[in-house]
Image (tube, rainbow, N blue to C red):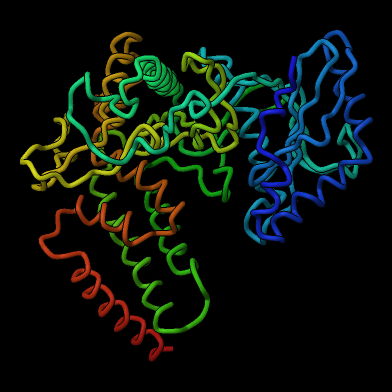
Length: 468
């Protein structure tokens, strides 16, 4: 049986397109691990139920932002995955404390998912969350997680570019919702099965709730609790409004920090545009938080659910969901969209058609003709069906909103979908900013509103400088 890592991205090609300092972060750890392959192999074999020998496939490695990843192939053809925590990227990201929280969070999240759902996920074999003399691989080894592997392909390998389907609109009818498959009935069925399985995963996670917002921690007895967020150690929060307020502050800090550090007029204007978008997000989001759900309970979200972390078979059926280190509990508005690939931006339409009806007046669309991409509506139908099929006991917020209504709402669009792009695009003016501006329903042109904002902020900054 072929190694799973044979299908990983080409190592050298991936390194060549990286910035040198980030490539060095990967290759230096590869060199650190290289002399100890046999020790890692012996350790894994000692934990195997039959103590089978294994081989670390040292040439086929991959990585993410936090971990260097290898495959361990046993002589019976089965394999495990071992992930080593990489050194910090800077003073704030992937620090030892953050890495420890991420590892403990993933271990606890996988424990919860395996215990309380049928979602296919890896099984943790062993882990050590921080370098220490007690590390079973040796005191000089980095933190690591050892887990079973899952064999599968991505939806893109099935010929479906899922990440492209959240743009563009089409007729809102079941026959046209999968137009992107270009008349290929097999692809249509694959995509429909994929969307149905994501809907089922979303419903199952909605039933795992806690009374606080944060990331997971697990003790020696297997008890899971909610602690600070795995990323920056903030929280835990007992209120959705407190969570979103901190998120809004983070966007404002991101807006100030992102981009060039020069003080040219162009750079200053770019920063002002980012600050404007951050202000738009706060203005749009806070009124959309439902008071009835403000104090929870709060559902579990994967946190990084995209096509590269979802493995399928050739029919589109999901056989594995990977990378749970970003999992945690979140407000229902942030939970609303499981992955940006099954949702999409509001798009202005030429007709007078409004979006699908909402169950809550707080989520009523503004008086602007707009519609959703076809993948959004196709997923929404699957989500509504999954709720009915599986029952909704324990899977609805206190407000009684359905998951399908939340996914289709302004609250979900701002709190989950646009929130993703706020971080990814660093408060981008032309895409995220315009989307927020449309949702707020301002009568003025966005550029005019920005000019007003820029004058106010510039005057305020000048007064603060004068006072100091």
